Structures are given as structure tokens and as C-alpha cells.
Length: 397
Image 1 (cartoon, rainbow, N blue to C red):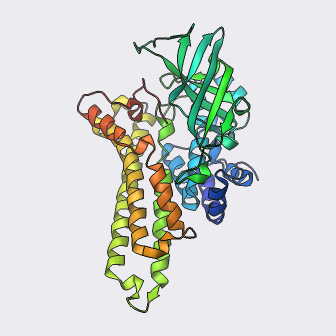
Image 2 (cartoon, rainbow, N blue to C red; image 1 turned 45 degrees about the vertical axis):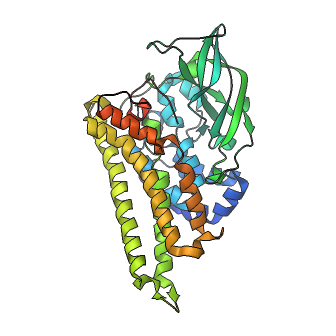
Image 3 (cartoon, one colour; image 1 turned 60 degrees about the vertical axis):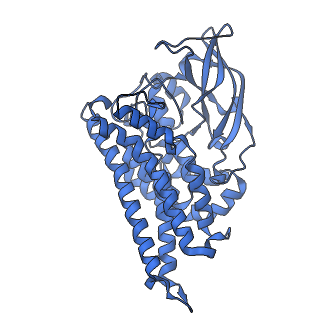
């Protein structure tokens, strides 16, 4: 099958494989990682190449189009959607590398990148680069990754290296081949079990300066995708896809279920109110996510910068993202309660969706740190996670 070359084609392929992912969901969860053929199924949709620019021969999907693809895959299985979302960052990271280096690394547009961006490792300055050592958590998709990107603090002769912006201890992101990484099988989780988000270690690996990244330095590209927070934008696709799947599942049940005691479920007042309330919440939340991204895209595509957004528009980006995660969890919980004892069995997708949405809500993008950051920004204070607003000087994912 020829590689997908447009947003419409990638989205169509993602929608086509969603039922197959739903059929494999129990297996994916049991294996605690994506089976190799499922990874290839995802690769065949074109999801991993969607961030590469047209100058590379890539489809260069907008952030809105990327999010739609992640929604479609997450509708099939949350863990598969999560891994697709993480793995599709390869083309986005490429913009923060020199073009010649990026093209040497990404010999195929369908290569997968995984890793944790928080600086929990140690990078010692040496001639030409760094010696990287450390242990990182939450390496979603790392069991099938081609490249691993990791945050680390920089040391010179064993002492903390100050940053150029006055930070007492500088940090960067370091990209190494997956062959230089040891995966530690720690991923026994409540939800997103199939994401393979294991711990991993890197021990005294040389990383040339050319394979280091900071989000304040775009080296290769321009436009809406060449921005410091671009890797966070399509994340709401996962909770939005799961919430849509849960609503469709319950509506299908309600259309046919008849109780000898209470009658048709579709005629039940509680059922009607719950479904309508959840549909309203999903519609409003989804609109907020896409409206915030669309406004950002329009400004950047016209040659503007993030500074050209109003404070409210800029804060809407991380706030709508967080709200999508929290609202999806609320929707799934209400539908779980609506189905009552039917939901409690592992054979019910409601059981998995409840655990998946609870787990994904523990990610930083769904936490109160986002509220603090947006609130501080709106009030002229100091955001604790500035990168969520596209303000460089902090990293995280």
C-alpha cells in the first residue's frame, strides 16, 4: 500500500482501522504494549508521518487535522491512540534539528520517537557533545520506538552548568537510537495498559551536540508547526476519541435494551438526561479545543507569532486541552454509572475506558499545574509550566 499523502487519506485510514483496534483492545491491554502487527497497522495509516513538512515529502497535517486522526484511532483503542499521538512527534521534533541531521536520523517518514522530556537524566559535557546517563519513566511507545528523546540536566566537570537565560542549572533534550536504550518492564498500570509506558535507562551514551534539542531554537522549518508547544496540541484527540466511543456504545445499548421492570431503556428519563448532558459536554469541549487551535493556526499561518494572540486566546490552548481530559473522564464515569452492573465486568469496554481516562488524567496536561500556569499568565504572574503556553524556558511531556 502506498504511503498516505494527505490529511483526508490519513484520516480515512485511521477510521478504517479503528474497528480492528477495538477488536484487539483486550489483547493490547493484556500484552501491556502494542503488538508488532498493530504498530504496523498504525504505521500504514500514515499517522507517524503526519508532522513532517511538505519539503520532506510529508503530508504536513495541521494541528487540527492531527488531532482528528488521533481521535479516530482512540475511538478504536485508547492505548493505540496514545502511542500514535506520542510516536507522531518525529516530524515535529525534526524542526528543532538541523535539516541535514534530521534527514540522516529520519531515513523514513514513518519512524517513531518516544521518551520523557522532563530533565531527570544527567548529561556531562565532553568534546563534541555529551555523555548521557539516567533513568526515565513513562516511555509511552518505547517498546516499538526508533528514536528516544529524553530530558537531562547538563554538567561540566561534574558541576551543574548554568543556562544562558540565568537558570542555575541548564537542561536540554537528547535524542539517541533505541538500540542505546534499555527498557525496564515497570508498566503495570490502572489504565492505558497497552501503551507500554515503561521506565528506561541510558548509560554513558555519547550524544553529539547536533542531536540535542531546545524548544526555543527552531532550526529547520517555519509556520504553525514550528512552535515550542507543538507536540502538545494533538493530545486532546485521545480523550475526545474515547468519550465519543463511550457515548456511541451506550446509545447503541439504550436503543435496544428493554427491562421487564422498567421498560425500554431509551424511554427512561434518567437515560435520556444523562445521554443529552454528556453529548452537550462533549460537543462544547470538542469545540473549545478545535476553536483554540484554529485561532492559533490562523495567526501563525498569516505570519504572526504566539505573541499576537490575545492573553485569553493563548490561555485557551492549554485550558481547553486540560478540560478535554477532565470532561472525557466525567463523561465515561457518568455513562459507567448509567449502565450500572453491566459496566463492572472486564469484558465491558466501559471498564477499560473508565481506567484509561483516569490514568490519562494524571498526565501533566490534565493537572492543576495547567490551571496555575494559565491563571498566572492571565494575571501577569509566573507560570509554573510556561511551555504549555508556548513560552520557552520549561520543558515537559
